Every structure is written in structure tokens, then in C-alpha cells.
Figure 1 (tube, rainbow over the protein chains, first blue to last red):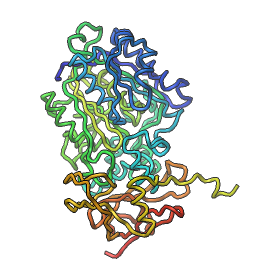
Figure 2: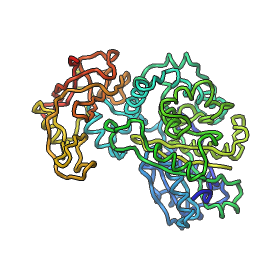
Figure 3: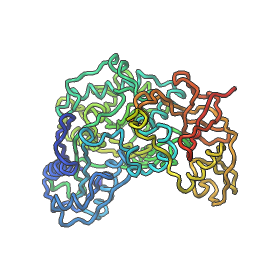
Length: 386
Length: 141
């Protein structure tokens, strides 16, 4: 599959909190989709593959609105925030095999003006694959939201490896600094200091307010096609060198994992790097799914950018900031740009590799990584090049 | 309307299938987990078969109820309205002597006093006349 598929179109809406998008979640995603399709130089009838995000709109309704008269491949991967990058893998496989020619991957929601992310699972346990286990064994004890599940893993990491609040803060600060260079970032114009971070209210120890992703309205989309077809399109293609996804074991229950830190990415990352023929040192930047700060640290470890237990030291001293050895979440991420389910991470990676990231451009960016994280630790990763 | 009736009800387990059996023992004041009849492995949450040896045979075996705090969090802002009155409270993962882990709460310990490795033992908290939740209190080391 290496280099046989490309991202050829990207699209986003404005990202916002107050007063909300004023659109339906489908309407919002369709606007991002139209921009991605236009960016690729295609029209709706040429989209013959669709991979919508779980529970946010059916392929049928996307196709009916966009005029996809020739749809022949549609699927949804139930991996929560790992779904967009896992869908990139599925799309790359599909176009490489000729199952579809042009695959659209949309995602987006009204996570500010609609139902808040933090309340979704306890109000609708069917929304995630492990929901019935959460309902019967976690939620009765007041463990109702992703922030709280993952806090258990973060706390154990702090116990085993001495990871500190200041190290988690370094991740929040890097995202916020990057957001200052992004016109579409919700947190542009609102800088954050380490003192501000440490003074922010504790929500679910060790997570403070500024360890947590934003809740925002917005949508993003990308279009994937084969390398052959990409040559005839208007944009310089971004090649998918390697892509993989994986699940922790057991994926539907967090507490009884023999190894609490082995998540889907632990399986996926070595596979994706092997496919790409690269090692983590070859990567110029990484857009890492940042639902909470610790998940960034953990994915940096499990993706192989450093050894397990060394993530805390890795994120210190500006290494993950623009100008550092591995700039992470150059757009500001879910923490400081917007929570667009990680689709905004893919869009940013493409922008960086096109050289069109403006004042936050990583100089000489040739290879970038994008990851996804979802549900109880499902993981996905793609390695992209210009 | 009184404060109590305005407060939303706490979410409870759905008493179906194997969860129904697990909680029926809790209501009798017993913490039992599935134990594989093929290889003897304990397991939680309840499953249809043993992932280690493939056996569909198992029994509900009684746990000593003793264990240690494996990890924990302190919820300072409830993200479900039914728990708003309880903050701060500390959901904790307890590793039982049998090796299985259970998400619960340590009830007699201030959240700031919790630590990994703290010895605890099970107690049962009657959430309703039908449902008792397994909780833990501090135990001598």
C-alpha cells in the first residue's frame, strides 16, 4: 500500500464556541465536504467512496446531499476518535485496490452548542462499543466520562514513572502557543502560562481544566484517491506512506488490561513505520490526537518517539514546540484549535506537507505523522509525505 | 418539591445476563467473579468463555474481598448531574488478591489520602433494595 494512495483535497468550516455553528451537524459536515471536494478539483458525482464518522451521519445521507450518484464503497469504523485516521487507512486500501476511486472522509459536530462531549457516553451508552460495560461496571461508581477513564491511566503512569503535572502542562502550553499562529483556532489570542495551567481547576485528578480538549462546533473533511489519479488533479498530492490501526486488549474494558499502557497505537505504530520504511526519527512533525494532555505523552511513547516512561522528559524544554525537534499539534490540536474529532489533525498535516501552513509552517517539512485515539484506547496512525 | 426528589437518579447497572448474576451475589453480600473450570483463571468483567483456554465452563467463585488500590482519580467536577452532590469523590481500580481488577470507590478515605498500593476490603452499598454496589474500605496491611 505504500505511496499508492494520496490525500488530494482538504476542507474545514470555521471552528467556534459561542454562539454555535447555527447549522445541523450534517449541514456543517457537508460544507467541509464540499470544500474538500472542490479543493481536489472534483465534483460530488465523482465521490464513489464514503467513510463517515460513527453516529454523526450516514453515508446514504451524505451521498444524497452531495450528488454521489456512483457510490460503491461505504463503511464506518467504530473507533471513536481513532476513526478518521483509521478511515484514512481504509480509504488508502480501497483506492489502491480499485474498490473506489475517490473516497470522502468527513467528520464534525456541534460539540459546543449541541450535546456536550463529556456527557455523551453516560447519556447514550450505545454510542461506544464498550458502553454496556461502562453502564454496568463504571458509571454506577460515578466514572461517567472519558476524562475520568483516562485519568486512571494517567495517574498510574505518574505512579510508575514519576510523570509530573508540569510535564502534562508542557503539552497544553505547546498547543496553546501553536494556536496563536492559527486564524481558525478557538484559543487564538488567549495565551496560557504554566502558572495559569497549574492554577486551573482540577476536574478529574490529575486532569485540570487545561488538560482537556475544547468542546467546539466545526467540521473537516479530506478526499483520498490513488497515486495514479492524483497526478491529474490540481493539488500536489500528499502520499500515504504507511497507515495502521489497532485495539488494546481487551478493547471494551479498561481496568483488567495486563499492561495498562498498551493501547491500539502500540500495535499500529510499528506496522505503519515498517510499511513506510521509516523510523520515528525520520519524522518532521506529528499531529497527535489530544483529547487530554496525557494521551499525547502516552502516544509519543507508544509510537516509539521515545521509550515508555520517558515521555515526561521528552515533552519538556520546547522539544514539541515549533522550532523544536518534533513539533506536535502545530495547529493547536483539540486542546487549543478545536475538537473536530481528529479530522483537523489530518487537515493540518496535509497543510504542513503542502507548505501552506503560513506562520506556523514547519520549515522543510517532508514527513509527518498523524494519530487517532478513541473509545477505550483504540489507536490509528498514518505516516504522510509530500 | 424536596431537594431529594429534584435530584436526578443515579445511573445503575442493567440487571441482565451475567451482570444480573454478578449483582445478585453482591446483594447477598458476596463478591464473586467468574473462574474458568478449564484452566482456573479468574476473570472480570463477566464473559461467555475463557479467552486464555477457550473453555465455556466456569463457576462464580467467591473472592476474599481483599485487595489494593491499583490506580484512582478524584472527580472534582461531576460530568453526570446525578453525581454533582458527591464531589469530590474518588473512583478507584482495586486489584483483588485473586488478580482481577474492579472499578469501585474507596468509601472511608478522604480522596487526598488515597495512594497506589493501599490495602482495602470490600463492603456493599445498597443503592436500591434490589442493587448493592461493591465498594471498598481501608484494611490493615
